[in-house]
Length: 317
Image (cartoon, rainbow, N blue to C red; front, top):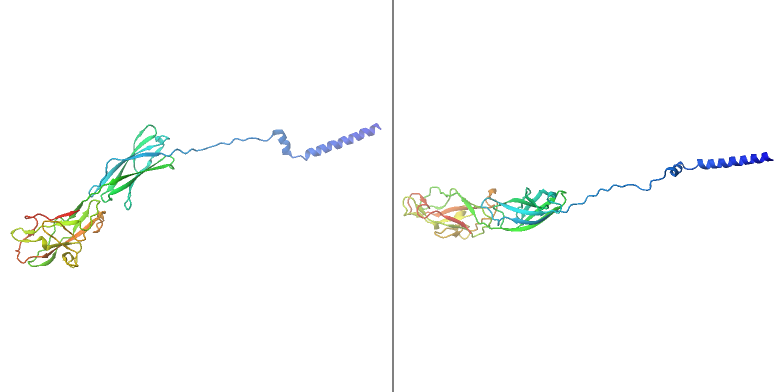
């Protein structure tokens, strides 16, 4: 009986061990090793954050002098502006400093090559810009726009000011002497051989109709000053061909001259413009001359304005 109990105990123990072994083999190996090594419960993360700088601020724009044009030339207008940057003047990007001058219907004048002329108080800088104004730039109020950025190239500050460009009335004319071919006594409607007299507007004022005027003088004989071609026998017009410069009638355009006072040339205007276009109208006016009547009483000789009465005078108002 004792041997039977031992055998039963052995069999039960074997079965129990077998069950435990089966249970162990069927378990997930990863769970097994986790129970030994453990899992991570935290992880480090790096941060990289950029903080944008404060945009620079243009605090003032100064124009050195009240500007006016230079007749038939260019005026270099100097402007200064002060920039403040809380990040220090070293953060100001002087390479994108720019100034522009603007007026409605006018060409924008600008300069993007401004100079950094001074730095002070750690966060202030001065810039100087020179902008070219042309003689045909219109008078009146112009706006000034100064702009600059910082080294991030994203922060740009603009500052606007104004100035008034003065008005200048000026012109030049050519040729200096008008000539006529050899004329005959009693002839009529004799036109000049070297006109038109070309007027170039060298200022920035529009000369409107009625304000191109001529003070005429008589043409006196160089040999015998008792004879002359009278100013009243000469006409001036803005058209030529088919003797249009001679026609002062009801349908005519030309204007008769008079001695010793200024006479307006009919419909003549001299507007502002870049006369270098040389198209006869942009900043230009053309005048044509005609001797409408040559008296039968005059003698054969040269006649000129230079003997006693002096040259004709052209003015604009």
